Amino acid sequence: MGIIICGGIVEKDGKFLLVQEAKKMVKGKWNLPAGRLENNETLFDGAKREIFEECGCRVELTGVLQIGNKMLENDSLISVIFATKLLDDNIIFNKKEILDVKWFTYEEILNMKDYLRSYGLVVGAITNYINNRISNIDIVKII
Image 1 (cartoon, rainbow, N blue to C red):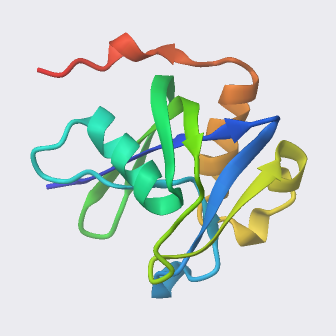
Image 2 (tube, rainbow, N blue to C red):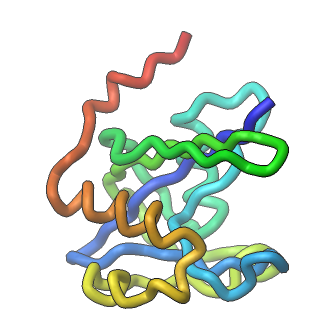
């Protein structure tokens, strides 16, 4: 079957927005605003919805930063992380799903290895953003 995760990098004034997970298995870990793609939803719509649901920010997707693949015990996970342009940063979140939302510098994030849900995914996507390794959004085709 497969699990598809989509989300994005939200940057403002050189800081990056992370969400602190409330789910039991990853409680307290920081992550990019991202989540599962829903049935009958495009990657674009799913990424914007997940970012809004997890932190209250409205964004425009501007490029593709990272596509990840992880083999799970009985499944496969694919993640697509987009670069975004922040349109509205009215931070609100559901405290049952997210414990906190906070802006971090790149240097702070590099030192959060034990506190990130997936160090490689988070740091890799942000590093790509900083180094302008952003693929054109048009490489994703809605068919």
